[in-house]
Length: 322
Image (cartoon, rainbow, N blue to C red):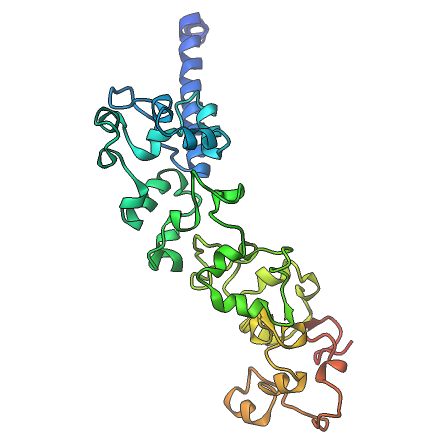
């Protein structure tokens, strides 16, 4: 019995079987690597197949020399070089060019982004970029009928980063004029000065948490603020309920305000009394307790935060004293 077991074990040591096992393991590993890569960067471009319908980018460049010259420094060109010229080339996006070439350059014989719908443009781009922007079709930009080429240009980008047709924030101002007005207020986040960008807080391709505002954070909007305003992050022993329930924008204007600290109103006491008053206490007994004010609220008296200094949260006092 021992000799039979030894023979069975010894059979696995045969060179042919050993090589077969190694080949099998390598194939499984390669499949796993490809699967993981696709999850990270998407399924990748549709590589030109070995077909006579594809003419190659060198043929395209004979007529489109201006585009071919600029494309040499394009990120898409870098992907093509990484794959031995078989990755992202002209025909990966525009389709096979044989009919276009043989017709003497007939524009109807090639896929052109300027003549198709936004949905067709997006589906073409998302053959590679779907993993990075899975929610674009349900985003406000997608629902408004904008396409990838509304903000991006592969061949004629004004900004090297992300191939944008213009620099931020001017690119965003083309549609969001009301935000530009807010940034012209005396107190504002430093977007016009170039110290911040719209995309620091917003994802123009859509988000799953706050789809309407496309914020890069949680539903209560706080995480987008506290990544810079870390002093208000907490956790605190005593939390100001409004910070958790309504978020930072219950008291602050996010883009710009005529009031210091981007406050919604000019006088701090007025802002506090919107919740902490006997009238609101009757309507919202749990949300606004305790009621106020204790002191005279005439204009010559100090603001609430002169005493309640830790208004975002405190580890020492349930009424947010220092």
